[in-house]
Image (tube, rainbow, N blue to C red):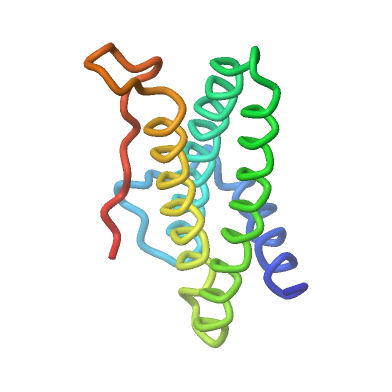
Length: 140
């Protein structure tokens, strides 16, 4: 697990230096592909935070619901970390390990965002949802 964190931190440092020079539509080497996967994860995490914040704001009058959302989010974070750490372990001997781990995190984050939307930001009737339906990657 410490190896996962160390490798992702090392990659993040490399990503910072690459920020102005990578065209993700033309990424060809492992470092560029990893950078682009990290960019996608950052976008997904920012969107999830937006939906999480809005979900909490929608239910501020009911502290039990807010507490439950926070507990669920904490449990989801633990699950997501464990799941994607296992993906890293599975690919530990390959150059794809960082990209596969970042892709796992992105997919789970997008799925969580969709869960937040469907459970807390939509209505049973045909009323307009609080936020638009978020996209979910179709990565099998």
